[in-house]
Image (cartoon, rainbow, N blue to C red; front, side, top):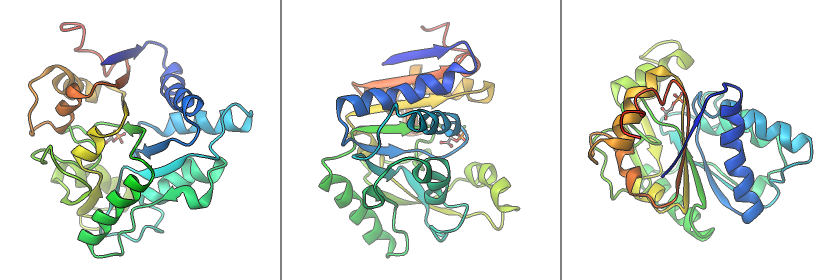
Length: 244
Ligand code: PGA
């Protein structure tokens, strides 16, 4: 585990974006699992800026969604697919045929197995970009998720629905179901980039990286990944000193 604690606020996004740059230099046709959420937005901005400057080329990548709402049209502005289009895909040279949204209109079981097939047909995920939820979720693998899971349907936890509700106006209007790459899908990725910023993430980051590996904290399984880079701001790394 390679932990980067970034002291300067403006270097967080650049440090994370650099991981993707390195990946694409090594393998221009990498399959990437892209996360949504507030954490990677700055990294995506940085990647767009580098693209406009001619410093990075997305033309060969295969772009996958880490997760998606299951009970929301993927063309809705609040879908994770729309988020990725808005924050990255529409602003760089990703081939439209290389973009792989989770097609949640298919019956859920079929959508999940089809997504696994789609990932496998591109040789598996080379780099999975992950945030971490306050409850330790990765993608939408909520506490209690099976470590052996592939892409699957999930009932979102009330904490997650609450956290999402600001986008939808109220708890009632917020989607209650997700489709997510499973923990095995994530762990099978050749490389993982885990990002967290802000003091509210400090306890869960410490628990996930140094606590016992348990289904209660899905991110704790990442301790067993042999090629993981963690990018934290100083606040999210607050409790790491004791154990580092
Ligand atoms: P955040 O979400 O980036 O908005 O904090 C992370 C997550 O829930 O995985």
